[in-house]
Image (cartoon, rainbow, N blue to C red; front, side):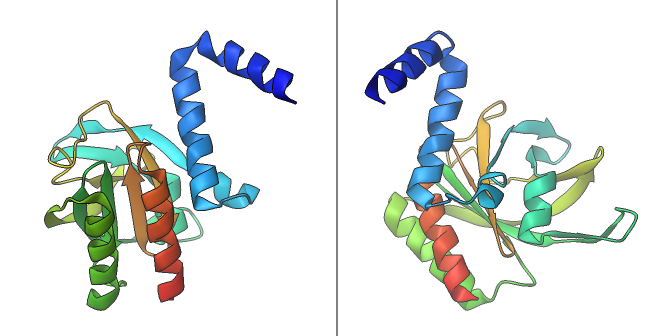
Amino acid sequence: MLVLWREFVETLSQNSAIAVRLLMTLELVVYTNHYMLGELLLVMVNSLKSSAGGIALQITKPARAAGLVEEDAEGDATRLASVYVYGFDGLLVVVDADRVSIEDRAELVVTAASDSSSIYRGEAASVEIAGNGYQVQLPGCKEAGFAIGDDGYTLPVDNVLLIHNGRHARLAGDLATIRREQL
């Protein structure tokens, strides 16, 4: 087994970009205890992009999984969530403004601030239609250390979307666990 692992690592080292993404994804799986295939598929990576409203992230599948959008039988949006975006070093917490109570929101923010030793101003934003999917505007993401072109690893949980830079997989997993316990 060790020999196979070494060969695998050597193969990955030939393409560092793939290796870094794979290792960050594996870290997310290990730290958040998402061993079920169904949950693993919900860990998505997209690059932050420039949009008319500032910086945004394409979140089509994670938004559906988190319940931030609702669609009719034809796939047309019937509800796009108004959200609050809270920033911490390497982590953004996107919370449905209408479906997550102030108390639950406060618990998530306090935990993230405590564990990351940082907090940046939370701001209202929205989930929007973008092309054939959805995107979310990310006010405050620059202060949290994100820039256009950076990877945004997303972890959806009921009415909350956790976006991290790959180095905060454990904290994102902890916040997902807290959110599940709130329900």
